[in-house]
Length: 365
Image (cartoon, rainbow, N blue to C red; front, side, top):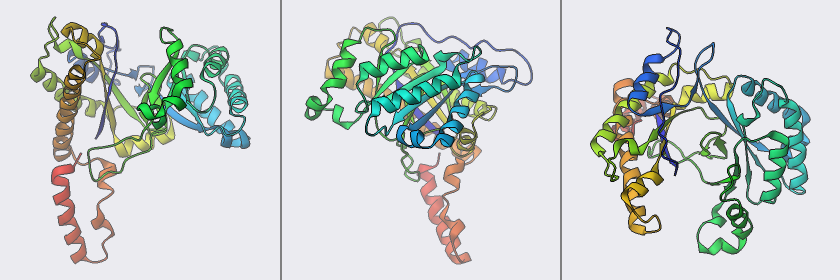
């Protein structure tokens, strides 16, 4: 399976168990088992099957503005998910000339499509690239038209390092001015999704998952598990690493079973779920851990300790995913890459299969 870690600085409130109805049609045992480990899956419990609670799409503003039929289909797609209570995040990109005007027109059409008493507009997340339009204008416009859902600004490479300070100053200035706002813009860095599996390609990640602002491929299907890291520390911030890694291993096993019971209401997400089986672990309480340790977050030594912590968690999950591939079978997207399937003769097929098996011995997920 594909696993990803996202780290957040949050408050001290830990994630509690989800409230579920105990019947044979819902995966109650998996959710309760995860809760006992301190893991909270982001899933929706309705009258029908259980479903994952978020979807992220990337809209080309220029393309949709020039294609009314395509826009109508996308609006209906979003409306259908919102009616089911599924949070949707839209990343607005490629606005081109007169970007502010085009984005405003698109948001007005989105407002018309989702204006219904049964739709909670707090489920609508919006993101814009930092260079597309003035950020204060985007925040004000989007809040007036579409309520208090999460708002993000995607920062590109020019916003990293000293070399881009002059170009990035408008975006950073806007973010600094609203740093204490409850409903302000949240910064997200751009970049592709990378995997440690050398047999899988990197993926473009233009979209965001609404609840956590995690960069993901557009319309990809994720089961997100929230974990408050301080659950495994004492009052001085000393972590029980062995217990943490044991819980992560058990949690990944349970999440793998839970994934099979999820229902996806978007066709593209459903197809992606069959191929990639994406599971994300959302680490919360990183800032609380620093406070408990009385560390200085501006000290490079503190950052290195946190980096080693996250790297150890990633290594633990990667190793367990590798073992799960041997126990339960390969990731379907990886199995489909077997080069022996395209071999013309039996001799070549055996040769490629031997090479493929050798590669899988160290890289299977």
